[in-house]
Length: 111
Image (cartoon, rainbow, N blue to C red; front, top):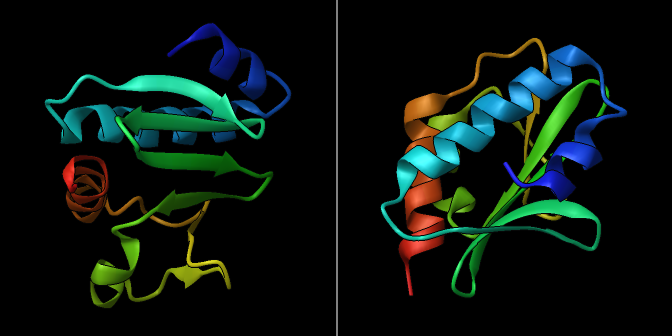
């Protein structure tokens, strides 16, 4: 994880940082492509070319922005979607790892 993202996460509690790290690792595991990490509009973003996934942590949840999310909405029953089409995972909810790997792969590798 690059220094700008680590610094971004410093104000968050340990539980939020741990959940962010799990999601971050799932992103990296989901693609064999070279990724670039950066803050876009002050939000942690992982890019493969023009494709990206954003993880947006909050005190009680993490939002995930990725273009492939809505195609998997039926596999994410019980999870909330924001009006902007982001997946919201509450800190008390299980992280749907297998579905997220598919979303991240599709989002980062689809041209």
